[in-house]
Amino acid sequence: MYVTRPERKLDIESDFFDFMKQISAISLDEDGDKDKRPDFAWRDQLLIEVKTLRVNPNQKIEKILEPEKELEDWPIAFGILGNQHFQNTDILARNRAEMRLRIQSAIRNHIGKANKQFLTYQSNFSEKKETLLVLLNEDIKHYQPVMVLDAVRREIASAKNDPQRTPYESTESIIYLTEAHYDVIDRPPFAAYPITQYFNENVDNNTHSSLKIAKLWSLRGSSPPLSVFRGDGSKTPGTINIIPERMKQSDYWRHEYRKSPYLRSYSHNKLLDEFTRVTILNVLAGVKRSPSHGKRQLSDNLIPTTHLFEEISLRGIDLRHFVPKSKHIRRTIDRLRLSDEEREWLKSTFKFQFGERTSDYYGDRTS
Image (cartoon, rainbow, N blue to C red; front, side, top):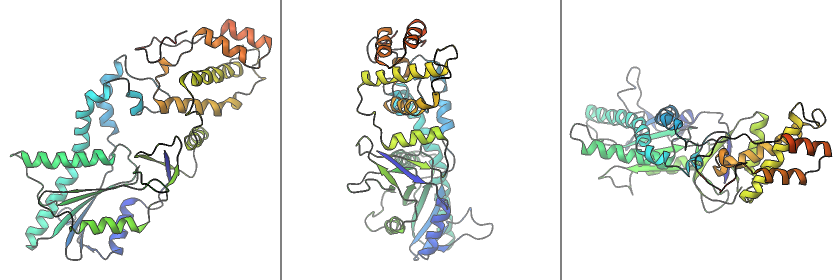
């Protein structure tokens, strides 16, 4: 499934603060007092603190994985590495615990500050109200809902079980609102912005006022509309691709392919045929000593080449494991509509110069 949305005209934090005004929440912020008070009080029942996830954890995760890049099983791929590129290694598995801690550290900072604000306010005013921490995320894809919820649970449990730490008893519920991810629903358009909620212990999660906040926000409809393309037909949670008003031509070609991935049904061998075909045509058009240089247009082959490499990347195929045999190359050359001069030049000069494979994904495919 491929889900997109346009860029926001108003950032999610400003939009949520406008939403608070719309439902008649009272701002508790005073000059010089923002760090000591929650942001809002609602219907004299609920204290609300809003925190926005702004720091992308990507750099911290990259630092964890940096030593792994020297190993042979580090994947080589077209474009940005995704989880699918690590499916034949245990790199992510052996680093998952440490990566979780990096996510948890960002969540800890927000929960700790909010808990202190709730505790201070209620102590000063001798009032006991329900409390809600709202975590907002506009476009950081690393903060997946399941990971954020896991980090919240782990952080609250670790604070409770560690005698040297202060429990988060003043934070009763946490809502996570993200516009970088979608959840699948069972009717068109088959995707929706997720609202993830956590309730602390000893809280009645059936009557808590934060449930009303979540419902009202879901009805607001101020988030950019989603466009859903079924693509490969899968219906699983995933990330939303934010489409700017203008994009580079190569990004547009990748975007168009993801809307309709026509190569998805190709077998590995058929994809290998296409890889060899577009590579040969690119060599004929792009190599100066080629008999076709200046006669064939390299630009004519750029779109199918981009589509092909996008499909290889989506499947998580390591480029070192996508090397055809010499006989495969020659068979493809014979099938193409080429002049005798082009065909003979290719057979005498065309070779794949790839490094040695680290493991055998698809059998012997080296040339």
